[in-house]
Image 1: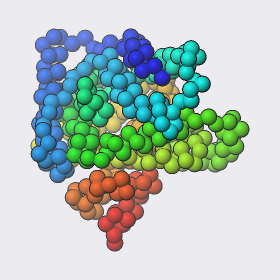
Image 2: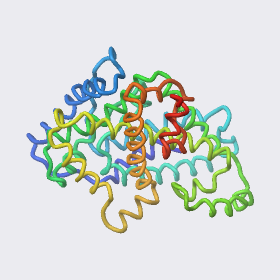
Image 3: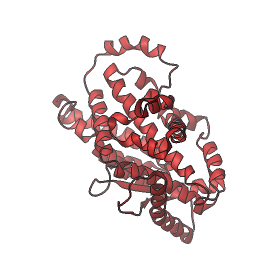
Image 4: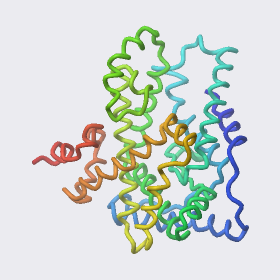
Length: 344
């Protein structure tokens, strides 16, 4: 994968943001940068995580800036799987042909990033930044576009977005093992995908794949995975669902004392997440965006159930070790996780 080409392609093709008067744009940028400090303080108070860590501002970017940051972070995340060690790309794929393949993959990835860039409000990249120690990004034109389209308070919506992204930052900074665990799982999965596999082996798995079509699948790519690949993939889906759902729960649970119009924002934002026209919905489905939206709801329901059952301190047992993380099945049946971890 040529990640530099992916970044350049995506930044070139991404649509521009809304036309905003300079004073309004400056206010939005200042709000987003400064609100992250207050937002994370509220998240720490609610969750009990991260006390004593520095409170840092976020980084505000435009759409091309997000594309470049996303490509950089993804490149850093996958480097271990693709450049050496177990699961590395075989030497035969190097040379001129390998460069062509890498360039083609880079262009395709750039197209995907260009499609996603107008839809991302913010992101915490645990592998980004100059020192590769994490980077909280807020995409100002997308935040302004969303708050205008939903006709909600700009100040409330910006804080609401910051609450979500600061929860993600706290997950990775307060839970010392999480960053390396996540990277290791991704690299194991990517390394497995680069292994040579015969077409006959893929065809042999299709009957079982078709029988599983009714499950909560993310598409054909998941259905034709080998058992080993599916096992890693299930762990990653469970983890990402937990992280997204926990952040969605927190951004609402902080409550109207911080975001007075939170109920209105949540209602209108849920509708907005359903997507636009037929072509847009098709692309969202093909790229897994709709599956990502389902993760928010499933993960929030898991978090809500566990907090209701054992309180926030009991929920925080998920961060004790990788063994304490819920499985994909437990995300759908949170009572099973409570019984496994807390007994009874």
